[in-house]
Amino acid sequence: MKLALTLVAVLYSSLLLAQSNADSLYNAAKIAVQEEKYNLAIGQLEEMLQLRPLEYDGRILLARIYYWKLDYSLAITTLSPVVHRAPSDAETQLLYLNLLLATKQLEQLNEHLAGLPIEIQQQGAFEFCRIQALQLAGKNEEALLAINSYLVLYPDNSQARQLQQLLIRLVANQAILVDIEMNHFNVPIDNWYSLAIGYENRLQPGPLQVRLHLANRFQLTAAQLETDFYPRLNDKTTAYIGFGLSNNTLFSAFRLGGEIYRSLPKAWEISVGVRYLSFKNNPLTTYTLAATKYVGNYYFSIRPFIIPFQSSIYLTSSFSSRRYFSDSRHYLGLSAAIGNSPDMDFRLNDPNIENLNPDLYLLDAIAIRLDYQRPINNRLLLKPFLEYRNEEFRPATYRSRTSLGLSLIRNF
Image (cartoon, rainbow, N blue to C red; front, side, top):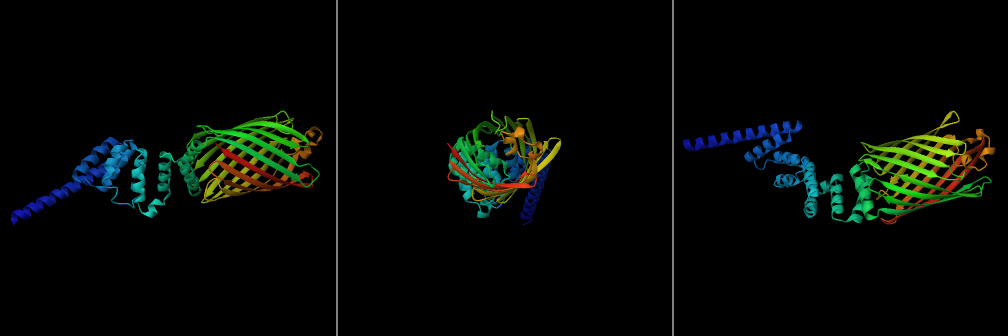
């Protein structure tokens, strides 16, 4: 009896010692990780697992270190024995799915994801894993539809936006663009008409567009050649560079523009830009700022335009909002603008501008615009709009302008 009690006491003491040693090794490994001494932490955790082979926290930490070191196979081997132990541990389950993605074990990924609790599967990070698996499996059209819906709910996910751009290029990396517009006035001015025909190539650095813009105004027809480029500088920053050329006074002889867009945390985006228009004897430089916020299925943006002109500074501000539906390309938009600025659309385009009084270049205007965009499928996008403007034609004399337009994008 005494011998049995002695053996039990020795065994219990050994277990306590092993437990204490394992805990000490785990705590030391956590400190080593904080100090980014990953090799030291690996040695300590491997020694700990010899004492407690199925230690949950230790295996998770060791697998995460292997993941950071891009040793995905070892990470999977380390995590597999315990990953099914806590299916509601979202952080660990997501680590395992990302490892399966990294090693392209797509069948195992889908099986594992399907076995998780529904409330875990419905979280955004897990849905994004499913979409990534679709893309890796070559199901690009299905993945594009899914990512468009995903971005309605999670617009601040820069990785998802990058994947969307990749999928757009994979499904159709070129497009034909057509824009038509008519402007009607309530004063004796002939309707204005414009047509733009363009081509877009979604290059690896970003989309490049070339357009021929035709306009009929003041019983004259003119053309402008335009090019716009939207390079991606990094995961959170995109730029815009554009220029146009024309030999007719209906357009600026030369236009140049640039802007930088930056994504911020909590679904914010800001931008700053400049536009230069070289009209006959009337060059204009416009500076613009913008702040954009995504809130659920909604988008809100405010953009002031600052225009130095003839020793004065003029300000126009616009506010726009969108309501997204089940697809990030499907929305209803409402925008409004108010301000006092040189009338670039009318006065500066008038072929008889040299006969006009410079004091009449200024224009107070209020505008409201309704946009609707809808994809017909992955390859065809339609966007009609309706705009109403009330603008000062000459001091204390106003006119209204109603504009109708339609844009079509055909991907191929």
